[in-house]
Image (cartoon, rainbow, N blue to C red; front, side, top):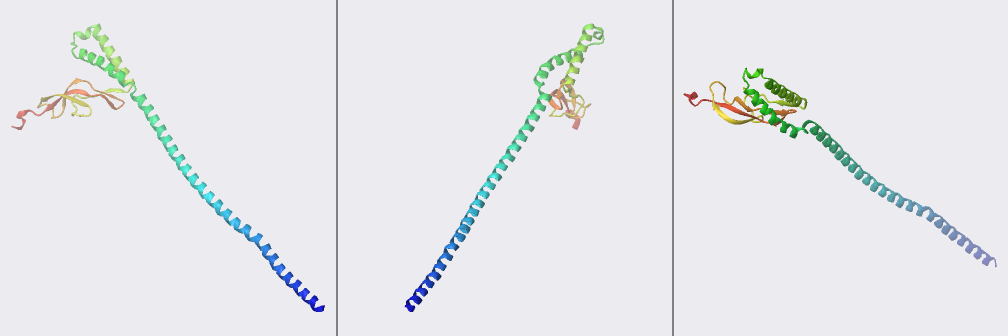
Amino acid sequence: MDKHKHDAGKSGETHREKGGETTAAEEALPLTEPLLEGDARIRELEGLLAQKEAEVATNWEKVLRERADLENYRKRVQKEKEELLKYGNENLILEILPAIDNLDRALAHVTEEDCRSAVIEGVKMTHSMLQGSLRKFGVTPIEAKGAPFDAALHHAMNQVESAEFAPNTVIEELQKGYLLNDRLLRAAMVTVAIPPKNSAE
């Protein structure tokens, strides 16, 4: 009987030892699994963060491009507005110039006796008023006669041999040219000097 109790006690002791080991393992699992789940969650969050950072970078690039496009558009509109203010009257002025040309031709043929005529005085006043109005809008005449020929400003209608003027000099202005705010509005029609044929002899 003592032996049976001893064996039973030993068996119970062994069971308690095994039971103790099982309980320790079971208690260890809840500690390990949350750590593994936590690492996975961290990696997931890091992946999401990297994705969002990439999205932010892409959106920021779009914002910068759109801002640059908007700034370029603003500059273009401002330039077009300035161009319109400076040159918007160009077509109207070109319509007026032939009338001024006719006044120029009329005054070019005025004699000293004609100068005493009231009609000629009226023509002079009209011519002067038109020239003054054009100046207010930035129109200035090109001074061509006696100047070196400039293809950007002059349109050569004739070439005349001349010993008096240096070659390539404008010796006659057939039609006055004009600038509009420093931009060519109409080229001057001119006659240009060339060396006489016997100048080399």
